Structures are given as C-alpha cells and as structure tokens.
Length: 194
Image (cartoon, one colour):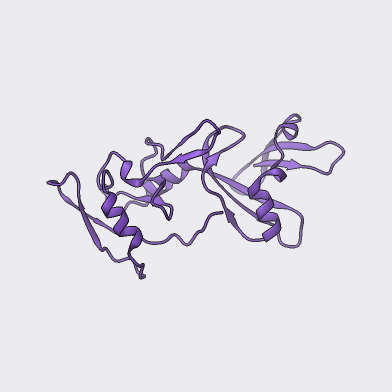
C-alpha cells in the first residue's frame, strides 16, 4: 500500500507491505516522493473528495510506473481521507481470463463507444500510451483474434441492443466468414466512469 500524508511538518510518503491479514510486514520510507506527486491535485482525488461517491476513472498512465490502468477512489465517510486504489489493465485481463466458461470462450470489457478497455489476453495490451501518457483505447474490432476481429457491425449491434437481464445470447458472428460461428452476448457492467 502507498501512503502519502500531507499536513505534517514534512509530507510523508511510504510503502506499506501487508500480509493477507492486513498486518504490516515491512515499511519503506520514500522521502522525496511527496515533492514529485501530490494526489490532491489529481482529478480523481478532487472528484472523490467533493462527491463522496465511488469514482472509477478512464484508463490512464500511472505516475509511479507509467503502467496503464484505472483508479477507484472514494472519500471515507465522516473524514477528510480519500482512499484510492489503482488497478492495472493487465490485472483486469488476468481476472477476465479466469472467468472463461470454456477454454474457447473470449471476454472483453468495452466502454459505451465500443472502445476496448480490457480483454482476456494479458499478452495483448488493450491500451497503448500516447506521448502525453494517456491510455489510447482501440476499438474492440481491432483485436486480431476471433470472434472480435473486424466485427464492427456485430459490435454496433451489441452496443445498440437494449439489455434485458439475464443476458440472453442475441448475435452470431463468423470469423473468418467461413469459420465456426461464435455466440455473443453483451451486458452492462453497472460501473460508470468519470
């Protein structure tokens, strides 16, 4: 865990290494880090602090290691503390891969515009960083593998079909056109981003 404390005579930053019971195993001080990074200046911090609601960011490059990911943040009720958690996109890819129903299943998470946030192959990055360190998202149809590759019409159909729970398969795709059909289904995640 990374902890940055301001309001002290000297800002303090440290890494806390915890075990599975949340007991501290090790603490490493990082005395110069607060001069380089102040989370209070980040949009995610300000929004979480002012709204008191859970914030989920769009993907971006982290200051600490330039990896791309999302941040979840929320103000602790009744306090001035804002907690933030970074989740790397490759971590989400690993989670999706573990959710496959069959070895041939393919999973992807896209935004409302059909841009790929994460998919189930951690070896293929979903987002690349541009010169400003922003994560550049690609259309789902740009993935080189079935059933997504080149399926712009399928994606349009999935994104524009009203959702009815439970998720009912409602679209078939062939990739390439003469190959096996894929059964596809889309469902909202229930998470909005700011």
